Length: 424
Image 1 (cartoon, one colour):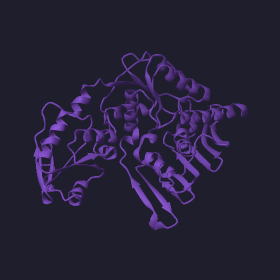
Image 2 (cartoon, helix red, strand yellow):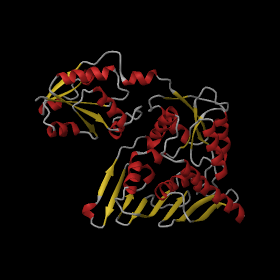
Image 3 (spheres, rainbow, N blue to C red):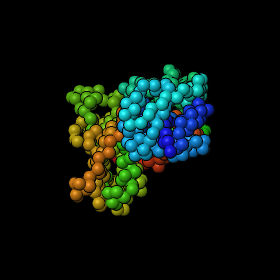
Image 4 (tube, rainbow, N blue to C red):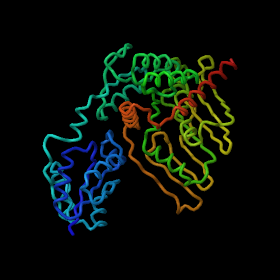
């Protein structure tokens, strides 16, 4: 029996894919089709597949041409697969000619002519692009615009306060302006991705969420950490019971980069510590322990009391069977790590944990420890844009950050400001 193997993404399966699979099938008696995983595609720069891995697998299965389907998850796997499955022929489209000649050492390599005039890229290109504008008075604007350029099907457009000519808008103004800016965009029929918090009052956040739902629009938090592969996998590992029952989450986010701590610094156009870092630090607390805490305490050290500009804030939560601690600062420095403590072990994410491509699961016996590595491009911003675009296309809010988490973040901001006003 002659075994043949081929690989591809098979996004938006089309006639060209089918013809290639038919030619591959004709080369032997048994066809193995390797379909690249979402994570592996990210490492190769394909970050906006229109279909999930399971949808792509189902598409190839439906052709009836594959005798076996496997998932390609890492560089170098082709050699392992050829050896493991005793493959006789490796084949791929002629647009890769010469690229896989090194596999001749392990089996015969055949480059097949592709069907002209059809490709997944062309199909994606034919779809109308999502046009995104920005409302921003921060340095995040340049980063966001740059990352838009890496995402298929999305294009940046300049816009003014009328938001004419765009489908969606990225908002990165000062947090106290978010409510007004987000509401204006929603009332004009635009989808919104807003730097968190969406609003600094809980009732305002709830109002905006309801307005977006009423108008069938997407309103999403732009916490880039939530969309990174490593962080997503961390949540899965923690919730799987691998480290036992979670009893504590400790998150620290500090930075002295913007000079807010310097004597005489103008703080009027800078975010305070709680708004700049609070949403990111709160994210793993609410996503791992939920939003139903029994008690919360907030302690701050202020740079400017009148402006309510905290240089350092510590927030402690008490849950029915767990605790959490969050430290954020723009005028103090600490190790920016994340630690999730369990009854069997713990997860450690080194600084800066919010941009991690790596974390460890550690146990009493060090031989049981495991390290996880994942690709991270553009600090996670481009993955955030991909998720936002897919939410709009599917007409439903993706669950990277739930409505409950968004509201809980706004609620912490609300409590911070109300406490400050009471003390003043």
